[in-house]
Length: 286
Image 1 (cartoon, rainbow, N blue to C red):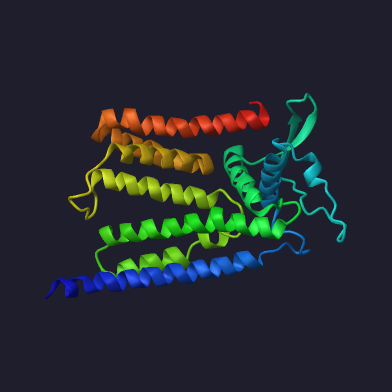
Image 2: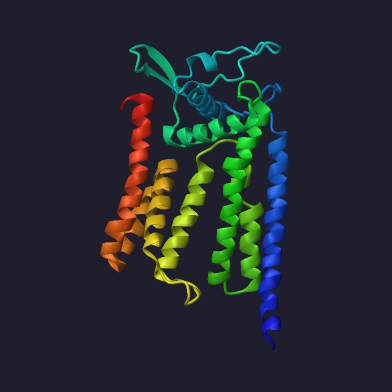
């Protein structure tokens, strides 16, 4: 068997992976471009969704987490409040007055507010003026692109860890078409970034332990410890149950290389923790 013939099964598998990824991404993009609330005024689907978007708008437009005025806005045509949400908390703000705030952890909202600010500079429009344009652009950037990265990294793991063509293909078919991640992709949510972070942390963990078929020219680097710590910690900020992954992965890496874990894994995680508590203090003063 020639080298080209020996590579043919792998090439066919990657063709299947790419076909699955492209078709699923196309379906998600189409749904994103069609997403709308029941009144056709915004692309926001629930109180949960509107709570996050209100915080993003408040921070991106006004530099504040206060959403009082935003959630009380009345649409001039429908007479409804398209930004209204019950997912909020009320407490004394930095000005000493009572204000409404999104009840969602503020770190993800802060990151998305930064993305919104950049999008606003390029488009010249705010999410208040063009909710469908800005909303759909941001959903593509913050949900669809990370999901494509998720599929690509998973495909690399499937190639290294899989033992049969059928098993590899089935895994990728389920990942691209059979999970709730594609459902979540049309709304701002914490589940998708958590899933992407868990996979990346797992990828770097497997890379460090060299579980699977890794090339000899891919030596373990100290940066892999930092990446594992960063993504494991970011997963925790989005889904608290991921704390078990963070602790278990940290313990395993500590056993393998105490120095690298202490110097790289822990500080990278500490950066995420500092950002989480810093955003919370900025938003709520606690």
